[in-house]
Image (cartoon, rainbow, N blue to C red; front, side, top):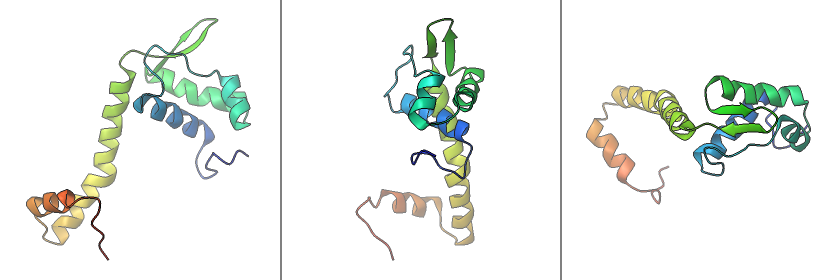
Length: 125
């Protein structure tokens, strides 16, 4: 098994997330060709069907599209779609639990803003 892949999560999902990350980070632009399922399979030493499952997931979401005989390409608007999706996930994963815990501790929104603005150099503990 490839050391870059997490054995606790489905490989096809990790392939899809890697492509998403590359689009969001600007490593792959809209309209640009992505590696083929066989290229992903060779790189990660996985079954091509597994790679295809991750890629097809992104096709279903309108992130990628196929040009017959040429390959898979990043769809126009893909970065915006992915950024919006990730912002929603960020809100659900981090902000909602943060707000819930803050309410338990009687931390106001202003207090939260101050904590966020303290800067990355501040260490607690």
